[in-house]
Length: 349
Length: 76
Length: 109
Image (cartoon, rainbow over all chains, first blue to last red):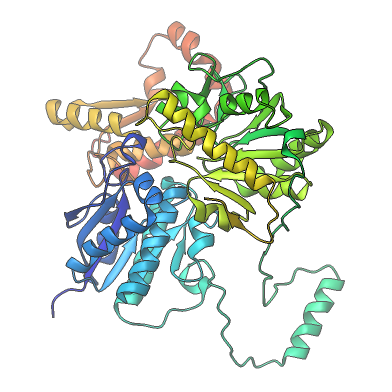
């Protein structure tokens, strides 16, 4: 019997093509393994063969979601795959979104078993954990060696058509599926036991972790924008030239608050980006393309808004934890309120 | 960050390229941007045209801020 | 280890032979040091660069290790590295380096 065929999807970086400057490449395919595929193949042994590797730029995929999906699906069809594996993407946001999108499309549009891997805080995880099996990985490529055996294990199960176990057994991000089963101890007794543990301060494990909905109701609109003080906030890491507060290029531990009181325009000489997750060329040449100070100043002069707030807040969104971002915003929102800001424009890359 | 700003009571609009991410994180007013490395710019255009594009996106954002929404809304 | 440096190490090794190349690293933490050391011995563990799957097994040392320290001028070492030596987790770094060399080095002499 011939070996099972696997198609692997990776981005331009793991494909050895380049970094951010190559994030705009269109999908291409190489026969056999490339980069992490080597490790996957070794871990899979004879269970399957990676017959082709599709490489696509992260920015290209994310900026052209529909077309890129179609292009990649066409490439997958050509190779008659028994299984499709994307990534692992760790905490790389665009890569995670691409892996999730394409794994989901291959599964639901081509009917081919499909899986990927990424860090639970990757936006791709939130978007696709319900529809695709996503192996839970660490937050950086340094964790590749731990991720590969987990990916290979799940892949092997899928190749054999075996039933996939619980998220804990098979190391994937919970999909929100509830499976009914018979427990030998009846529910009321388990509930009382759990309550007694809780009341006596002992550790206990919930049988059903509550999903975190965390949605905010939309606020009513600004009544009169011409009387509004508007503030700018960005996750694109725009900072004064030289990055005086040394905001990190990824996993930011702080945010910056900078004065643009007398500035009508951000210039190459005055501002740059500290963000390490996208090609900085454009932002460094003219930071207005991430933080539109020039346009807001014009609108201010024309009376379309009352005032552009003199301070802007910035941090880098690259790999910065949800908890940190939440804490930053909670803190500076209080300042914005004190400063009488009526509305915020938040830009992201 | 968008949610926290809104939770604090300040109307906020998110200008962002990968709209599905913005939807997932829970922004209520979303305006699509040009591209990841230059959400409000376009190196393919000359300076005046690029600024015009930037202005259009910012104006759309102001429109989003002044529009009543009942749930997540993309303004494009 | 970034892609350019991986390529440099690969090229130099091809040119001069693995037994004639020593890699000296200065990473500030044990994890980073381990990653770099593993890259030039067992191959890029992140599988992102030219040394992915390439096992050079090179001799590799960290600047805070005795092997390097005793091979260079004491005064110069104190000047250049003395301060960092006080701040870095030297023991952890050395432990990581020895582990990697033991497991993957081809020239352990």
